[in-house]
Image (cartoon, rainbow, N blue to C red):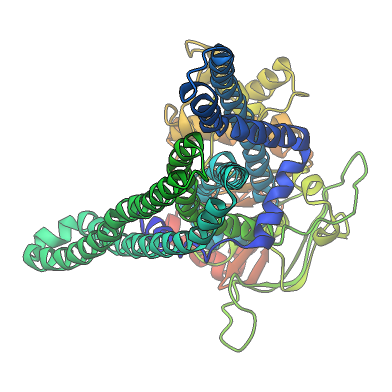
Length: 598
């Protein structure tokens, strides 16, 4: 278990039924209100049908068994059989409708979360573990599904059952109904208290399990260090401490849980004994019929089952409330701001950074770590700008700001004279073709990874893009060609093949601005030749921004910008910068040595 998962496990599970959260959850059921109403109708009729059996027994005893009258008894039998069939049909329909509504609602929750995730800024993902986001869309949604399909429906069914039984008891004998009503709050309060402490102990065990699992994960991950320094005994003692604490919590939870069902049986037995004592006395006084007592003895055990079930739903409700709070926290996260600027049919591709300063951290105080400091440059339409510098100079940050993955704190980034903050984010990114060093491919075919599911891109268009970027050289010999599966993250392809696919993907989208972020790094010589040829074709008649460590890939750029510690130190063509014998010259000498040429 990872540390993020352990953190999830140790998260408190809620404080009970929050009516505001519940009301918000119920909104997901509004589109399916007719089905919800039908389900409630099934519950009501089903509860009446299930509790009619003891009442029929009363009529059988008083009207047929005791007086010895056979006539009409077969009618009761048929009614009883009919009720059994009705119970089965209603139970099936109730379960089917409930699960259908629950699954529909959960589908809507998952889609809302996924759509919202795609609108969140990258800064959010920088600080949120992927495992936590996965848990929101899986385990937390499953907890809501359990609430909708089992928790709430069962609660409604149990309440209806209690009201139905109590009403029938009052119908048969008012004093017995009052006795049962008096026992109801006492037994229910005791049951809820015991369930609460039982669940609290399980929650403590869950929290301690997080510590236990974290200790285990750390020990296994660092096994090489443990064995290298001979610290097996020390790690064993640490693990034993976590293991013992978890054991204590589990044993305490088991102790409470073991007392839960016997206590329910005790309360049921006491009420049953009171019913038998009271009923026998009333019969001896000829103030109660035998059929009433027989029916009472059947209703009392049934009366305690829904009480027990309601208490058991406490854990389901708490878990669901905690999950709902986490889900709502996610969907309430501020999405990426969307501008209103709609570009013309053809974008010129002019890029301007105007006194841009940026940091990924806090901008307040003198300790702010600025990644970019007062960076200014302009790339005219159709021209190419190469950005070079040491690792951490801020080169990739320039790309992120241009694509508006992050918002600048100072200055402005403009495309065609319009601040990227005012652009519609999707329109802006559709105009920018980004090729990165680490190419992400989705599980699917090669053709699907080039088109990214765009239905407007024909097969002929995809193949033309692949030929133009030299990707067709390796695609065509494959057994299935463009229908060849690439595996998750493209594991079946080499780094160079993935890179060529990314170029084909960009060309198929036909952007006005091309951005290459270390796109030719870690590539073998032959593939690099193909890629360099593809780069040359892609850059034709496009505004291009090229980031590279190897200066051989940037010497043909119209302008080269040298970044150092987030500041623009030099700018100009390759030969001009070499002649200055400044920072660019020193970088060139480090890579190629004295007297060697790029």
